[in-house]
Length: 358
Ligand code: NAD
Ligand code: DAU
Image (cartoon, protein in one colour):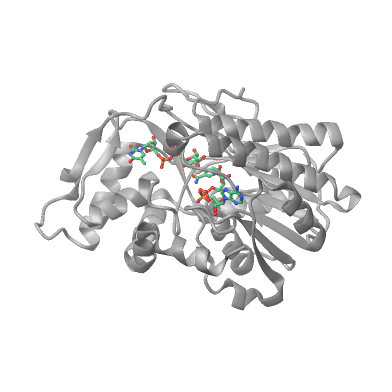
């Protein structure tokens, strides 16, 4: 497969840049890549978007960085931003991302993930020939659930099972359709479970780290034998950047960590690492805090990703092992209690309202 060099990216819109992966991606671009262009970070700042995740970035990037608080569901606003910043490239992270929330209240998932993506595609299409690339960040959950054997390949049929994954599947289809119908230059990536610094503590790994540290119950859904494939967030960022630079237009790439693990094993590993770093006050193993709770409705049993295409064509593979990434992540959460407290208390939401009044 040809590795086509893309045009130089000048004005890159990153949507959802204040979220978990988006903020890590902006840091990655600045600190670990050869990116020389400008970043326009477009984020609504929902509960999951926190400007503190990018503290210091404005100073380092200076004029090369702009933050625009905007909702991707507002088409007029997007058209204005694309024109004003002369956008030639988009890396689209913005989404409602938590499966449990999508089960309780699906409406925002439909508007942001589907309508929001549609609005961005339309704005990109409106840029005509000057538009370089629309990279869409998606999930392995669009493929549904696996049994004991098998892996997700780029050719695996879509079978999304939750409102979240169905909304992401719909957005993937829209992106693909804009390539085939209008010739919009696009790439899509479908990635497995990420973990690392700045992840909102509703997701399994940060939730378990914090609860275990505080001696609270560790909720494990069902029998704890559901399997996820885990990837350290920096490795995901590196893969996205490789695809944006050299991936083939119109193609989909799977990204995975080669780290399949039952949830109960992940929880036990966190307990053991924490016990080693900072023993519990009562001296007991934190494994004793594990509490099996009611299962998630429609809970996908197993995900496993075949990322051979990305490895073969762009020479990407994950650098961080699950164990070393987990240690780094645990250390980060223990060293950033201020961030954790502010995120949990919702203080930063009040701060946002004061600083970003429209
Ligand atoms: P996140 O929930 O941490 O962040 C989402 C960001 O999008 C937040 O900053 C939020 O404020 C912003 N946002 C939400 N609605 C918006 C709207 N209407 N307009 C503008 N901004 C809005 O999510 P994440 O975990 O960083 O995931 C980022 C992307 O990666 C998502 O598209 C997700 O589907 C995909 N993904 C995530 C994982 C994972 O394990 N977290 C794995 C594969 C793919
Ligand atoms: O696979 C990629 C997806 O990974 C992304 O597209 C999603 O945005 C991201 O949220 C993540 O989805 P999951 O549902 O797999 O992640 P979560 O951290 O919510 O759950 C991981 C597993 O742990 C899952 O099998 C459910 C289980 N779980 C989760 C929580 C929050 C528990 O057992 N207990 C919990 O308290």
